Image (cartoon, rainbow, N blue to C red):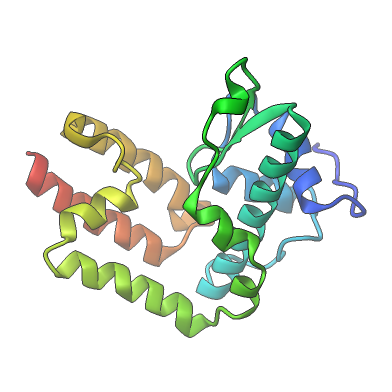
Length: 198
């Protein structure tokens, strides 16, 4: 049985401890599952089927991840790869200090006002914004971004898309604690990309 986490530890320190158990990295879903299983008092211990609980859990985890990344870089110990599908500690190589660690999302997640001031209606608006982009001619790009494949550029193939689709479905399926709304978005994005890349 997994040991409970020290409740006196900051969430960033708890995450750091857990990441050492996953040298190959792990998904956001797995990290949240581990935090809940080990009774972290820093994240909601509620079902994450509710949109607002899901958003708050996600936000708190990513706030901790970006704080941890800053701390590790300042100490020169290691680097931290952050994405919903792969969160991983990386060795600090000789060029580590030259690596651009800028991430546009860092500012968002490090500002706790974004957590405090986001309502259920705001979360709904974010989802609606995604769907309106899907309907408004930007559907291909919105689907690629949802799959986090926008860096593949011209090398993107249907095989890569399908592999990514299977990963996302396994992470976000409601039977595994995911969101039905998120799964519907993933399925819709797959339909769109299937049309473009067939």
